[in-house]
Image (cartoon, rainbow, N blue to C red):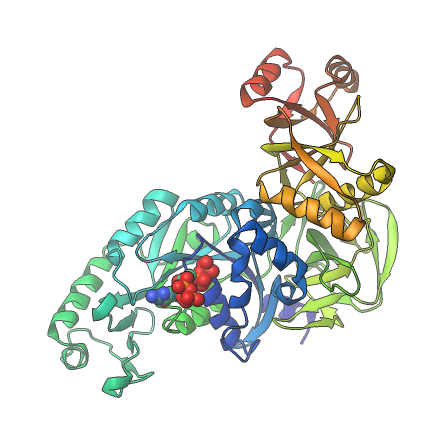
Length: 525
Ligand code: G4P
C-alpha cells in the first residue's frame, strides 16, 4: 500500500470523559475488537492511577505495566487506529491537553445518568480550541438515566455542540431492549440471551411494520416510532459540521455489556477524519507532503525500569518514517539516525520499521528532547499550538543534601522536561521553585528525585500563587522590567522569563502597571 493510502486509513484519536463514565471499559472493548488484546481485564489494572497519590506513586514505580497503553495501535476493518490514552487523574490535565494536540478527533464518553460533567467540559474546551471533531457515546444504558432527548439537550447546552444521533436507545435500565441503528435501519437487541435472540439484528425498513411490535412489544415499539418522528425535526448529521467541531454524532450503549460499542467503532473509523494538516510558525504542513515531519507531544520516563530510559512520543505529521532514517532535531540543530523508534501496540512495544502520518513513534531520549520539539528531514519548522499552562501551585525546593546541588538541577530540569511540572530559577537568589497545576506532582517529583537521581529534597510552601510568562518586542524594555523586579522574575527550563507573585490580584496589578510588557497565561513550547 502506498504512503497516501496508508495515511488515509489512519485514525488517531483520544477518549475524553469524566472519571467513572466508562473510558477504561470502552478502551478495553475497542482493543478486544481490534484484536489488540485477547483478554478482558488487561486495561483495568491501571485504573488505580486516578485514585490516591500513594496509588499513583506505586503505579509510577510499576510503570512497566501501564506504559504500553500510552498509545494503543490496532487495525479494524481496514483502518489503522491509534488510540492515545489520556491520564485519568485530574492533576495530570496538562498532559491530557497536550495529548489532545496530537489527535485528529476525540470520542466523548458520557455517563447516561450524568450527562456532561466538569472534566468533560474542561477537556471539550481544549478540543474547541482546535475545532477537533467529536463523536459522542452515551454509556450505561443498562441503568436508568436521562431521557435521550434530555441528554442531547444537556450536551448542547453545556458544550454548545449540536447532537446528531446515529443510533437510538429503545428503553433503558431494566426496560432496555437495544438500539435502533438509524443509519442502517435495524434493531440491535441487547443481551437477550434468555429469549434466544443473542446478537440478533433485525433490519426494519419501515418502523410502522408490525414485526417491530412482535420483537419489542407494542409499548416500546410505539415509543420508538414516536422518538424517531421527533428526531426527524432535528438537523440531520452533517459531515461538514462534524469536521469543524460544531456537531457530534451520538451513539448509545453499555460498554460493560459490550453493547453498542461495535456499532460505535465501526461508524467511528468511517466518520473520523484521517490525519489533518498542522500549523507551524512558518506554514501549514499537509500530511501528504513527501518529507517526514513530526512533533513531540509527550515524554515519559521509566517505560522500562531496567533501562531507566525516557521515551519521547512523536506524532508524525507528514511523509514516512523508515527505520534508519536521519532526522533533524530542529531546536538543537542536531541530526540523528533513528534505528530504534518504537511502535506501541496495546500490550507490546516493537521496533518501528515504517510509520505514517497519524502514527505515534517513540524515540529514545537520553535528555535533549523536549515537549514541543519538531523533527524534520532538514527543514526548519516549528509546530505551534502545544501549550504549557501557568502553574497555580508553587513550592520552594529545599535540598536536604547540600552536596547534591548539581544532581538536583539536572533532576528537576529533566523531570520538568516531561512537562508535568515546571522548574523556575530566580533571576536573583537561589530559591528554586517548582510550579504545577496539581498537588500530586510535588509528591511524584520528590519521589522520583530520590529514586532516579538519588537526591533528597523537600518541597516547602511559599507565598506564591500566580505566574505569567512575560515578553516584550522591545528587548531593552523587557530587560529593564526584569531588572526592576529581580525578586519576582524567574527563568523556566527553556529560558523564558516568568513573573511569579503571591496572587492573581498582584499579577493583574503588575500587568496593568506595565502595559508595555505582555503577561501570558500559556506559553508555546
Ligand atoms: P473510567 O475509566 O471512565 O473512570 O470508567 P471505568 O471504565 O473504570 O468505569 C467506571 C465504572 O462504571 C466501573 O464500575 C465500570 O464497571 C462501570 N461501567 C462501565 N460501563 C458500564 C455500563 O455500561 N453499565 C454499567 N452499569 N456500568 C458500567 P466500578 O464498580 O467502579 O468498577 P468495577 O468494580 O466494575 O471494576
